[in-house]
Length: 281
Image (cartoon, rainbow, N blue to C red; front, top):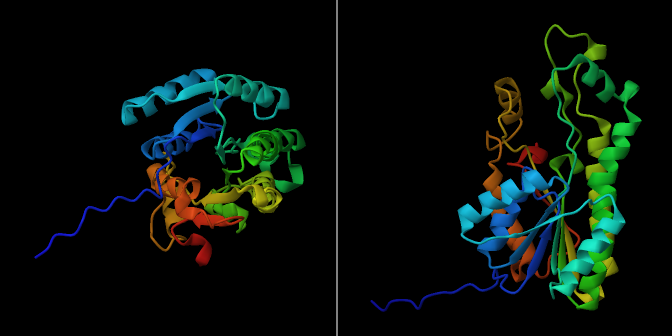
């Protein structure tokens, strides 16, 4: 029997591409970095927390054998973003892949005072402003700076990390505590839904704005990712997911490789929801 010729798929190859990740020291930042390095991209990990960033970058290097560049950047400060871009261009590094990943994710914890501030009737507006500046305004500012550079180079990819809560409402039953008054029940704050939904609007806008310059923009919306959650919460959430479990952090690497490569070169303006089927029910 004649053997088939070896097959080499180059559509996922990101060799020669420069990828910048915001919030790279966060939960998924390391995974995005690994995914892009595995596909051949040169990765620039950025975060405002330089200590955590250095630690995370070292973990990436240990896992991949390649050392990513690390840069401190404040996504809420346009001067900080422009300063970094200027520095990169001096080193002849032009960003062709931008992953807007930075976020301030308000944890739902068993804390009476915190819960009261999260509830809609007592919502902390100052906290909302901080979350918005990082999780939505920061996406916009980075997209303006690096997306404009991509348009001049006639090509690039912008990936905005959103959430399954960009398309469904939080199920507050997940956070309910027994023997707790209704007015003091913990909830996922409204800020999270507003910001994640806003990211989808931003993605769609960007997807048409620079389309003629071959700059694509898509969103990735992960579902619940296991990160040492309480057993009660995990049980409640998995009952809402057809696959019957939460996601592992590494399970989004393939999606990042797809979205950033020519494998998805006709995909534009879409929100890719990877939630184990939760939003289908």
